[in-house]
Image (cartoon, rainbow, N blue to C red; front, side, top):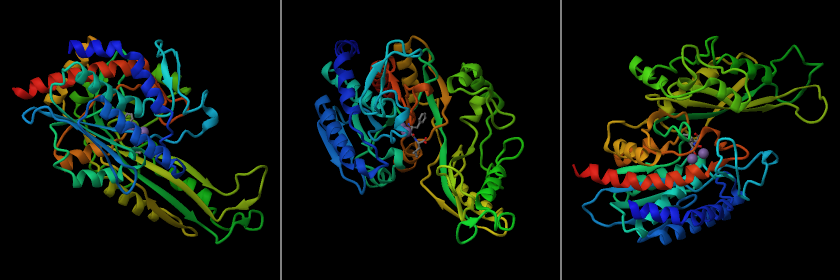
Length: 463
Ligand code: BES
Ligand code: MN
Ligand code: MN
């Protein structure tokens, strides 16, 4: 991999400038106003993968945004690595909280990124991390050191639930045949603590409506006599956790796999400072389920959170009114072996059942996703571990993540292929938030580490 690494160090500026160009495209999948930009992003990306050296590149149409698919086959007898990433991004809102515009990337130094970080929506999630793979591939091609076959599957709907990717995967099992799926769309503990993500949480997402009177009412004339949907909704939501912060939906924990004491002890060895954690997000104390550490609460335990709540009068000044309706969006992060459809059903039944007389409740499910765990005794894990060893000079540690990438469980189900999650982001990179950024250290380290993964994975596959 010597020539590959040389090529990478000779082309650092080019790699950065290309990423900056891609970050200027506002490929926001959630907002139909940006559909031209999302499609343009797919085209630009396909051109980049072709330039990098793929010999088949396709922009595969779907009912939604296209999937950029590419291949480089060097020898049928060698293993195949399938790279997955996403080129869509979250909306930039609230835009007034960005220090510089979300789609005008700038490089700035920060405390955690003394070499500089690139600030833009998608810098880390996932354009920056995805593009590391395109550049690592280019470097291996240019150096004539690509050790195995490669396939790319880059989608434009991850941030809105990957519905069409699910269909694409089901319909293209042969095309997508691979020995491992390689994804950089997660994080690591710190820049001096390389880590491999070994689990992701699943997701169940619902929207609830509580309806009271058939119109907004004068709160003097009717106040005290009718159920106020906002009061009721607040009560109902509050009742979903008990005093220990356990979730009180009957059956919610039935399928949760508890970790063994050994596993919990191993987890507790990962470096974590509660003080730094609190400081970084401006809180004076952590909060959560009794009996579990902050690390555990955020990864191996399921959660229930209100993501948004609205109803009644929220304009200027005061309006004395009892609203007719109140709403909330609620997400539940799930862990193995919780099933998103089952959990959604448990939530719906429970939420309807706890509603008092005087209101009616409607629950609408949104997209969900299954949790996933990835093995640490696989060839892929060993290859990743050795790759990090090469570039960071220390061993990577396994870490379960709290985020969700629902297609990981689906890849395993549909393709029978396990995923290796080599994430290079930091929790502090503000993904989905204003001022999202990605360290240049992380970007280049990713590009340097990926080729070693290919090398070791190919070598280990031969035995
Ligand atoms: N890349 C993230 C997920 C992630 C981030 C996992 C950091 C682990 C560490 C992904 O783009 C994402 O945002 N997923 C969504 C779920 C999806 C169904 C919208 C999420 O986790 O909220
Ligand atoms: Mn992502
Ligand atoms: Mn995301």
